Image (cartoon, rainbow, N blue to C red; front, top):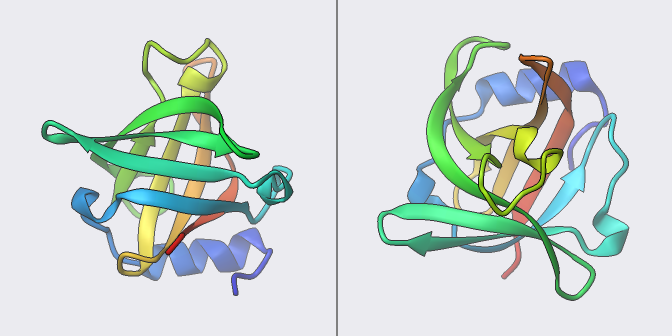
Length: 139
């Protein structure tokens, strides 16, 4: 469905809309589209759940290997056009010093079912773009 080209994905991301945090619930397949290796063959998924007034989540590999806990918040993507995005922020106590530096930006392609994200990593105080990924709702 998605091209494997950063330039084309950037254009799709620019045109996509900012989703609502409340849209995210349940399980989504993760497909790394560019740069990083795709973990889909290891059944890479994200699981989102609501706790009090926040949406939280974690990554899953294989059947039930949990890693990378995160929370969602609204933000902007300064690197493209300062448009609104949902931020998947891994700055949580459960994470180690490597995964707590991940900051993803997500926009909506198809409401409640398909999203395009930008994987970023905080290194030496600068946010570094590391590739695009998609999230597709598991029904």
